[in-house]
Picture 1 (cartoon, protein in one colour):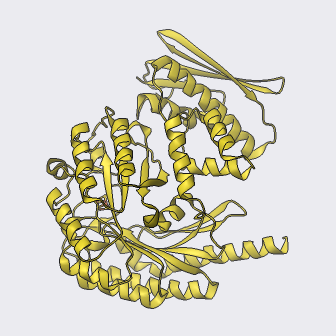
Picture 2 (tube, protein in one colour):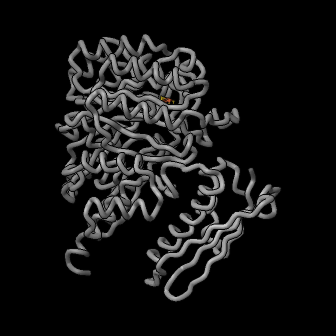
Length: 492
Ligand code: SF4
């Protein structure tokens, strides 16, 4: 159904459209000038200290919902935020009544629901009050509130970091083949002609940024090598990278290497990783169905994933993560259940359950692949049950646009295998020094609730040519953070 939106607030059209998409999918919200099947008419009144929102859907028969809320008149962003929430909730209720469906995240379309929970607690609310407030503000389902509760419990004591704490991220933007759902800027490694020049630029960035970190007193204890697929480098190249990192940044208490694709791993490479202080690796099946692996363009079989996992265990890796994706093309509940059954037998230390998102820059989007909605919520729930059965609990979560059924990605782990970097990155409570093409450094200023970002260019050749500029961007951002903190301390 194509629905044209009419509202007195131009600035909220996109927010209303987000709610329309929750019920009718991508492309459902259109302008009055475009062809449409129905009109959604919003009106707003401010009366006796109350905001009164009214939505009417005119689609053959008309359906109307009115919602009142205490008017917030503090002006600025807070007033806008509160009004937006009320408008979205009213719109959500209209479609909930009209369709009989109830999307589990209610009217919440944001990326990090845990932030909202923390904000409620920062205002002095107890856990129960915070939970009740989220239920009231967004019509969240009990199932999603339970999930948030589980995550807040798991993050207890891990969120507050010293002001100079900073994580290290190193990006290797190469993969053996491109997955059909991939939206990253990583390139296929091809004949590898860009790898050595890339590593040379990266080592240069490591040298300059380690000096900068020392000058600025950054305390770097947590590292993550991601991508792309870092293990698509040769054993020698990856060995050089890890040695160089260690030489410049010293010992880290946590270091993850994404060894995501089994076709990039062998005993020699895994043994080399064991020689370095790598604390956690990720071997990602995505699915244990060969037919699906072929459809999504991954050049390995399920058996290769299993063999790789056993090899890593036999070499002594005691912290292995696995990623799966619910709602991959052609997969039904039985196929996803099979994937989870195999994983349960393998018994990894952590499991990340993703929901397929069709991003605009992916091959699936180009191929106009239509997301399957059937059974997705059941698949995600099964992923959760499997993680629980393996003794894991949810410890971070994020949502993306274009996800099937507007669901979520959740990281589950046993307590000792919680990846600090994942929490820091998702909750944005700790600064990140991100090196390599496409890395985004973040300077977190908690007191000011502000994050300064310094992105590295994603194009590999441009990154190589402009690496000094990437370092300058980071230095500028971290210097600005230091100056602002000094200003706050002086009361400026
Ligand atoms: S392994 Fe990851 S980064 Fe590489 S193509 Fe697949 S989704 Fe993209």
